[in-house]
Amino acid sequence: MRKRYYIMFVARDSDGQLLKIPIPLHYLYVFVAGAVIGMFTITGMAGSYTRMLAKTLRFNQLRDEKESLEKNYNTLEKVAEEKEIQVASLGSLASEVSALYGLKSEPMLIKDGQDGFAAERYTTSVDQFYALRSTAMSGVATMAVGYGTHNATLNDWMKLASAPSLWPLQGRIMSSFGERTDPFNGEGAFHRGVDISGGYGQAIVAPADGVIEEAGTRNGYGKTITINHGHGYNTLFGHMSGFAVAVGQHVQRGDVIGYVGLSGRSTGPHVHYEVHINDVAVNPHKYMRMTLNPVEVASHGD
Image 1 (cartoon, helix red, strand yellow):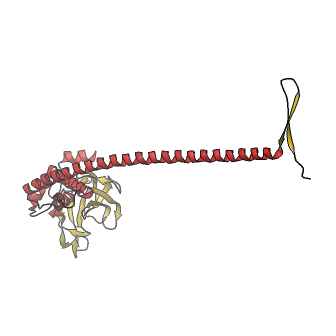
Image 2 (spheres, one colour; image 1 turned 135 degrees about the vertical axis):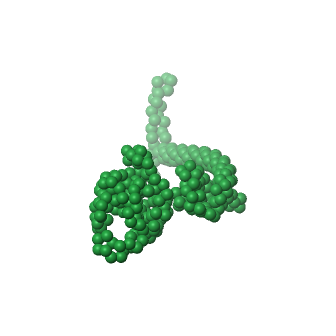
Image 3 (cartoon, one colour; image 1 turned 180 degrees about the horizontal axis):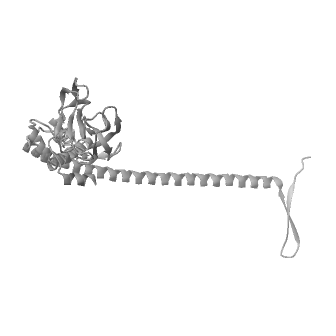
């Protein structure tokens, strides 16, 4: 015979009598199973609600990012339009100034409506405009007219601005560029620069803006400085007595770089001065157009 199990609940009624309430055990199993199922149901609902909240937060985040991107795009569009207008204005003004000085038109300064706005074209136009202004203000324009440059472009003027146009010091040219008789052995030799006489210790100045590439001793040249002026221009100064600059230093036209001496193979105090274009020695006298007075030299040496 199958056994049955019960859970007995005992309580008192209103008369104080004990009441025994038997509950079959399988009812308890059903209750526990229902509780467990209810717990899993509640947990699942809580998980679904959490996932829904996460998706809602992500949606709001994406919506905010979209609005921010739209604002940035609209701002960039306005900036692009403004720069396009500036390009046209600068191009027109620069073309007028270029025409005034007889320069060829620069392609980057001419507005091309087909390609729209281009950051590189804008930057180049601005750079060329300010270069045009600086060349005019620094006297390069006057120099260009003096050189007799015809059908030149602004880039030609910018290259001319890098040319070593200043005398490294005021003095007499003792020996010119080209073939000459070597003062030490009496034989014919090619002189790669010019020798400019000066008093021992006299200041030597940079003939153009540039960067010091060498400040040391060379065989025959003695204490030597070389300057890279850009656009293929380099200058060399030999037989110096001392240096006023160091390698890597940026110098401006007229800055004192060293002092006259007689180091190396020298017959007396002077500076041996060379000009190189793309590593080829050329006649420096062709570029020596201007000089500084002693007061200006002193101020550049401070």
